[in-house]
Picture: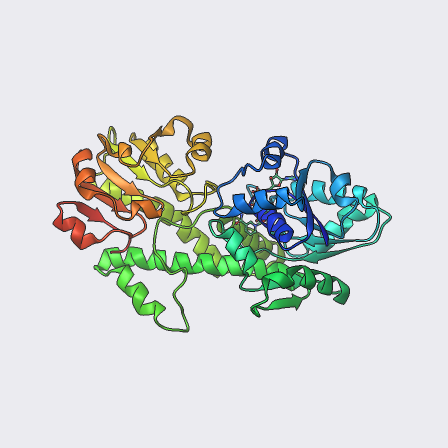
Length: 432
Ligand SMILES: NC(=O)c1ccc[n+]([C@@H]2O[C@H](COP(=O)([O-])OP(=O)(O)OC[C@H]3O[C@@H](n4cnc5c(N)ncnc54)[C@H](O)[C@@H]3O)[C@@H](O)[C@H]2O)c1
């Protein structure tokens, strides 16, 4: 099939490369010329394991190309995926201006019938809104389907090639069949392709992210309770997760959820609830708990240092919102560093891949170090924010020598408290 993908970010680039890898001809469109220039040379503008090889191979085999021309991409394709960003507005609603611009451009560039697929996460009812935006700009027929994306940054290629399921939201059997055929190579092991109406597909995406965010917030609130009453949230987690009705995933207490999806999607669903006058109190509570959790570790730091952090320096390990990505959107590290700097502290930071992205946001709020050991030089404590693998087993003797005081705040509960205490550290985890 000939596929156009509009928006070449985390989702569009992965989807485009994976569709190309299964034999389709894919043209990816973006408005960011710098990004396109890099991609044409086979350079990947984001950090995503496994993506570079996939892009290189499919460019070389001429199945994948990049353009800023809608005419070139949409003029000859069968299916158009809309994968532009939908970032949050201050009122929590998603900003649909990128989607509107893309939909209008697609409509103007069509030369015949097209299937338009909303892959961006969009508010409930957007399949109709996209059609309304397109109608004045084309005389050609089209259908708009919803195909929410569930990939996770850090394992995006694997998730796309082997999805737990594919959700296809369309009223039309012919559209369902065309999209199911496109996805067939990725579900050969029998994972379901679920056909539903577009509204249910749109809700499914928000429901999944909001539910996962709620699990995290639930554990974070329990963690604070554990700290108060002397429990260990890690033991509670294991006790809970062995109940098969609950399961193992997304039960880890930490410094709060971040990233480009959970915060935005929870807020978007809350905004829909407000607009439709339907109380969505569970996710509202999850969001409030998350905002508190991002600051919670700083309150523990303050308490340890007697309430005054002025002149203190903190080593921060990890900046990205989670390991294996360079995405800094809504990263808890940004809030933690901000809170520390506000009360007069200094930060020395390191992340294996997101230093450049972090620099753009943090600017002079942090000293950017070349290694994670360098952050410790002259620091009063270590604050671990993102659980990159390389932080899991450091040389603690060296850590102790470099720190001014042997104090560790482990925001992800990756270290062994007993062993660290034995080595002379003061250790704080989350909820333990
Ligand atoms: N990142 C994720 O993990 C993830 C997972 C599932 C769903 N989603 C959803 O997918 C959508 C895209 O997310 P992302 O993280 O890939 O965003 P992104 O910001 O990484 O990429 C969006 C891309 O769209 C381009 N763009 C903007 N306007 C355009 C236009 N008019 N024409 C062509 N290109 C345009 C931008 O230049 C950018 O390259 C969002 O709705 C997001 O919620 C993201």
